[in-house]
Image 1: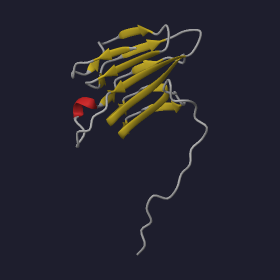
Image 2: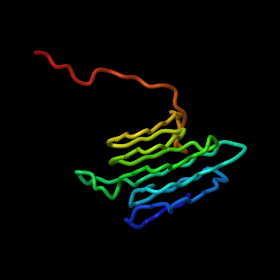
Image 3: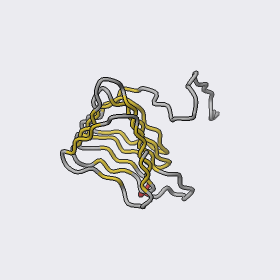
Image 4: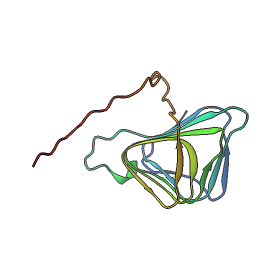
Length: 140
């Protein structure tokens, strides 16, 4: 686990290559910005990578808590990715990964592809299903 206590956003350099050797959680008080091409690679067994932007009670949500993924951020087939922010997650520009995004608002655009796979947060148990119900009925 890596924790970033500063309110500045985590960002990657252009053409960064990151080798993931085990499950990794990066928790930031300042959000995440993947605005340049980067590669996140693991091999032989699947690794989980968690990018978590810390909780905020501020309304409206401050942009400093957002997660932005763009410009060919690549996670190979041995990396499952989990993005969490209570604010906005922006996913765009020819990214293709396996995992999930959980956010207050998800904005998806411009050739973005994600294959859903439940990436469980450690300590939270397993997913056994879900239930849904009607939240609002408008009658005229």
